[in-house]
Length: 327
Image 1 (cartoon, rainbow, N blue to C red):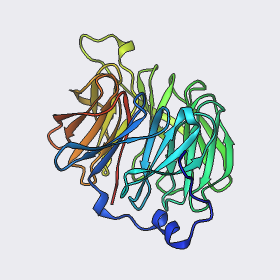
Image 2: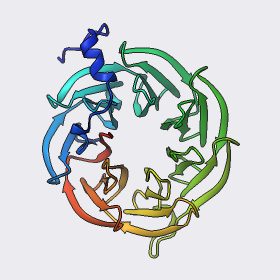
Image 3: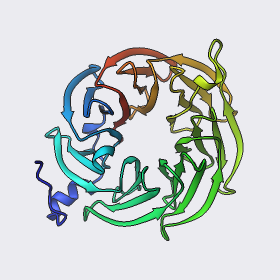
């Protein structure tokens, strides 16, 4: 049985979680393999797999701590968040969550973790320094997509069955608005200037553009691929460049990434990737975008400037989430 680190951390250990980000971890990617119960480590200089880490059952959501020294992964069937030490490349701790955690989001300082628990319709709030669950927010049915606004004041949670994006005040931990979107919202992403919130709807086949100030849908991105039925085009993960000019949208079983103009909201092109594309992460310099392909068990590497796929990397069984440390 894995030894769990005490919630009462010594100051040096706590500092590992809360320090300023270090660029020395910036080009290592971690991929959660949902069916393989592993995390694959990829060196993005050589584009090779350097390690496979055994984790709990059904890993999905995955993200670096702000200092780049830990990777957190939601292991849904174990009802917990596991913590990987990136120096040791092994699981060293667990964090409390509700049943079936899926996606989660960190606040800007990296002190608070917000976790969507799919099976009990709640968002769990975790104090990372104390390693303690400090609150819950009741949301809609089957919560999944999670993101924090750039100013840190609003947490967004999407509920797949309720078909809403919930706006949660991070100070009061109360829902302050509910925005109806198309069927089965899976992911949410803010522009860096907080002018827009993008929410993907898997079954609806659209991405809703929401004005965060007015808290209303102002437009939608639709997709059409010759030779594919509309029901095969299922938007899930979203990646937005820092300047907000370009967005990449994973289209699930369509096996495509849509390249979308961030201003006009028009689709510019489609990139053919692996089978059942899920989520994505940029390298810190935004030269490359890595996307996970669940059915083909690989990761596609996209040259962002050229907007083309340049490499495929074989990983574990049913890759789902991916994270790369940001400076």
